[in-house]
Image (cartoon, rainbow, N blue to C red):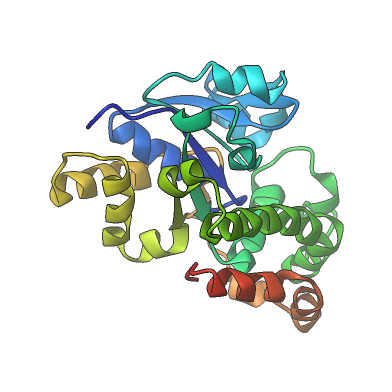
Length: 261
């Protein structure tokens, strides 16, 4: 692999944030474990996996994003839902951005599952508080999911529109790639554009081997073994809430800008 600059994985929640970090680590980059936000970050490598899964707040470190990001060196990877590419001057021409997205309906369900079945302390959504999964999902959409995810999705699509604009900063046009987590899960060959973006000299077979390592890596948000009918969570009430939100319009805009769902 050539001299890869610092990489920031800018992701929607539950769109493969930790998966892509594991993939880049398998490709030979250094995963710092830093989950960046504006005034704090999660130092996920400072805590064991079970702590990161159940009480992620224990990994929280106070720190404004600018000095944290500027500590990154070549071949290092950080990640988060914070729109760092909108502040590309922090890394300047040295910043490489992987923008991970997926269908918002999938991100909402995935975060609900994380809150309900894996986290400790989200008492309002636990089975002891609301035994019915569909009713709990509806509560999650109203109280947390729609607003939180919508803001991040909107910021990502704004970035896409800036990049697609003729007046978009050249550094963003050349140093940014968008990847759909769902597509890579369904078809591993869809990871090859990302491998080429990273200027790897690995063969396709070698890239696929590293992809398998990333899929097998246990992360703080992975819940693939849970036996739950995710589609059944979308009751008529949940569908109505989603339809009345800005998600459908922003998703349509994203598709017009060339993102595939």
